[in-house]
Amino acid sequence: MITKNIKQMVNYCFQYADSVQFKSSSPYPTDARVTLKNQLKDDMLVFLGYVFDETSSDIPNQIRFLNENLEIVISEYNFKRFINDRCNNIDLTSYVPRTLQYFVMDDTSPMTQRTGYGTSISRYLVNTFNDLGCNFVAYGGISDREADRVSDYINMMNNYLSKFDIYKNTPGGGSIGGFGNAGGKSNVTDDETPSNVKISLPPKEETLEQLLAELDSLIGLETVKKNLNNLINLVKIRGMREKLGLKTPSMSLHLVFSGNPGTGKTTVARLLAKIYHQLGVVSKGQFIEVDRAGLVEGYVGQTAQRTAKVCDEAMGGILFIDEAYTLTNAEGEDFGQEAVDTILKRMEDNRQDFIVIVAGYTDEMREFINSNPGLKSRFNKFIEFPDYSGEEMIKIFDLMCVSQDYVLNKEATDYVAEHLRDLAENHEEHFANAREVRNYFERCIERQATRVVSEPNIDANSLTTFKLPDVIED
Image 1: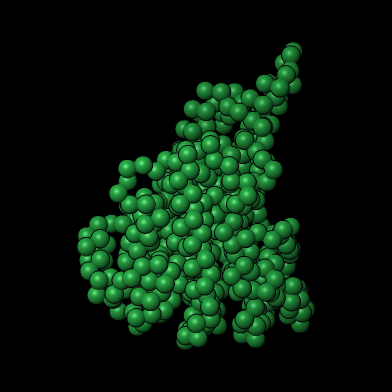
Image 2 (image 1 turned 90 degrees about the vertical axis):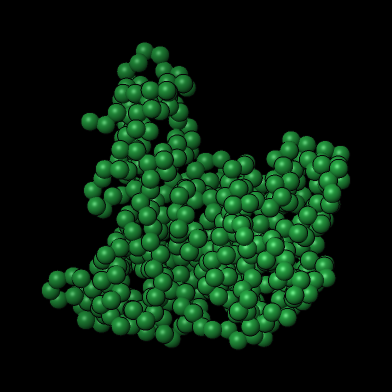
């Protein structure tokens, strides 16, 4: 049963709580009224009370679930009283669970060594809370309210973790703002438009926890992360309900990613392919990236053949179509509709192991989806990728500098910050976001190289430092 795994996760957290409390360098007060383990039980009960929906169709099994997994005895009546006393009159997403605070203290302590755990206990605790909440609400048939509350609470915990140097304890690292981090160097990337077809297979199998941590560590994209976490939780809950023998409503997992270029659409879609694979939604988890040129040929019948071949490559994974609206808005004789019809048929014939994500500018994508009843019925979830703020663009630029061994002196730092804030506030309609930051960064490198090459004495410091003339834009 799925609850057996959850009980094991909760028990591990109980063991970690005892370990944190009773170690010689423990941050937990020696005169505390309750043990850290009992504090953890209380934190988990508050969390479940927060997500509980009184209209749930299977409250008795939910009560049994929390009693078995939290090792407590509480009746339905007393649980509802507890909710009224502890969960209804305050915004619990503003209060970090005490247990998480002490787990973070232990994770960040210089006295702590966790080389054998494979992940920080703080991250493990957040994952346990998330799976505990998903299992709990699965009994009653997940409601929008419950999905939002689980997501909001877990986002609060992840936001708290993001303030500390926690992610380094997670094997494989994470990625920030769509810029991967491996071996201490960043592999800078953005939503580059493919010229044909690109196939991305992960070099190694990452755990679901690592992938979710990577998603959470992206710069900005808060609404995107919340929407995806809601979707991921719904997928997990569907799987749990199936294992429990409960009725499972059908849902479409095809998505529309809309927004300006350089906002992380391709990066997130590539990550989602791995997450869907770990969740068992798709069997292989490969990511096939394509645009109009990779689907459309110039003669009758050829487009259908070429599109079918691309779909075959994407079976068991995600087909990502960038600038998908170009398939239907070309002037004159066009074969884009043939590609659309072929994809729709494959989506219908292979519902269980084929996910399609279409992406492009917001207005154009809505016109594209509304242009065809088949598209409208299959793509009913839009995720909008907002433009980056000035502060987020500064973080992206800083990460690029770190990845390429550059630093900025004080004058250059001040100019870059002011320039990027102005760029974020005053830009054209179809702003390139991270791509524009990358272009600016490359221009800075060119200017710095031109300046340094004429200096009489060139050392490591001169090769790695951006000065004011290097970053000023004409």
